[in-house]
Length: 272
Ligand code: B12
Image (cartoon, rainbow, N blue to C red; front, top):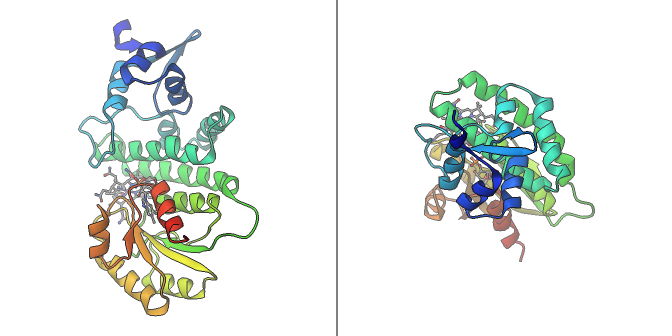
């Protein structure tokens, strides 16, 4: 690699059109890979271009960007190292929600892109998932709020859906918004959603998180089972739900929007 393949943070900030401190924050939180030489951080041009052109990725790029620092440690099964990155970000001012949004979600997406591109194996993906699960477990108490909640939300992933992490992330953000989540995790049968919703106190909504393709049947069945017992809105969201029209076509009362934050906002909108 030549010196011109790497640039300092000032040039990186110019290329990205953001403030120097913003780029520094990206580096500290692992969103942008960088190496330290003496007192100087250096960023590879390829990583910079990948960040500059990244939006919401619906498909894996042919040549995935280098993994984030957090993703590297997750794939190595290095829980202590992963936690050190998270703690470092919080020590430099990142909120728990920002840790999810700016660190964990990009790391998980990077793991998925690299698996899809054949750069890492399914075993690596499982290993990374376990570290992510343990990081989320350690983060959980930081989202707790004192006092009476604004209501209960039952959420989970329907039968056939093994992605529990997106649900756990939304559950924590609901908790931070003074709502009480009952998280049924992955692969929850329709009858379990119905039973839990029927027994929930001050239920505001049921949320279904769908990440994998091809689960429309299970989504419809779950919505039907819940509606049989209680009259609360069932909202669906997650990576596999394209838009509001898609959500409504499955029998849902609404779509949660594209992000964990929008999912929380969709529930809050039901409170007013
Ligand atoms: C970890 C992981 C797994 C783990 C799950 C472990 C666990 N305990 O959750 C394991 C290894 C089990 C797994 C299995 C599979 N996976 Co997988 N997995 C992932 C990975 C890397 C991260 C998932 C995750 O947690 N994402 C992080 C969240 C935070 O991102 P997100 O999806 O964008 O979620 C946000 C939104 O959905 C939003 N949201 C908005 N509204 C709402 C509403 C609700 C209620 C919720 C919950 C969320 C939500 O909030 C979330 C948080 O911001 C993704 C890559 C990726 N891009 O996500 C692949 C990925 C989702 N997996 C994929 C695939 C193909 C599979 C498998 C079929 C094969 C495989 N790779 O092993 C199987 C089986 C899937 C099944 N039937 O359920 C594909 C899906 C592609 C597709 N079109 O279906 C992905 C995208 C990888 C890829 N790039 O191809 N996987």
